[in-house]
Image (cartoon, rainbow, N blue to C red; front, side, top):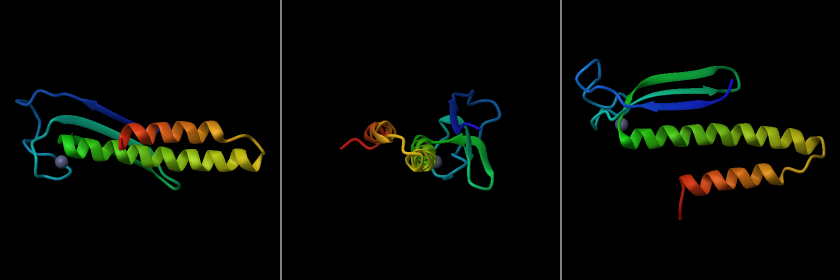
Length: 100
Ligand SMILES: [Zn+2]
């Protein structure tokens, strides 16, 4: 299973809660679906979220990818493969999400 995060817009007049279902503080802006594979289980969440919680969901996806890449890099390193490309991609992703 690939980890995934999907955002869509929605019709605010139909079947959408007024407030974010994650924090309950800000207005809902997006419908989201998050699917992450953990070590022992698959985590799926869906609902409506605000722009701040949307950013948190992206970070959740990034962390899950980091863990997956670390595991893959460790496996490749154990087999004597060069893991520099994995680290470059990971740092590139982090620089987009965490600009300094
Ligand atoms: Zn929120």
